[in-house]
View (cartoon, rainbow, N blue to C red):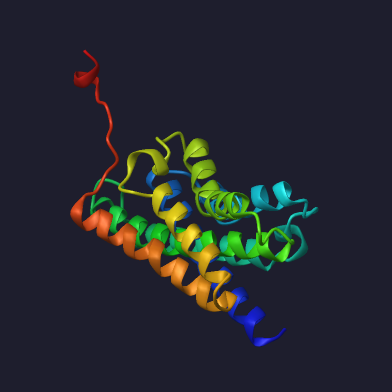
Length: 219
């Protein structure tokens, strides 16, 4: 493994931990048992990547070729469950107060990392000239796992109801794609990842949202 591959693998592990934590948090808030929490954590971490790999024809998907991702996600989920269980934090007490902050931080980091990992995978598969496909792959890798997590947990998908989310992934993916044609891939991935994270933090701080209709608007 050369330096570039090592950096990308490290990013993938960090992203796996971040998304596993966010999936575990949803499972804990929904009062799931440890198995349910682990399933959500793992699915959040690898769901987008599996979808991406199927689209570009990587069969079996990378998660089955390198089970380290599943192991890391499962361990992370179990640690979050154990920390909550042994501290006896309920969804109505202390946990409720820190949930949104942890979710925002973990989802932002995971979204930024997996968005650029998706773009890099598309480039590695020979689609470097297909801008639309690369941006799509980056976005689906970033938001796909969280979408599956929320559907399984029976909650409104995070990407549709929270501050700028999928749009941040699209912008980060576009930045990564265009910079990859001007500089090396690690620099492009770093810039794209930071663009996603910064946009998510700013959106949360300033409460940026896309226009929406509520029940009163429709009457």
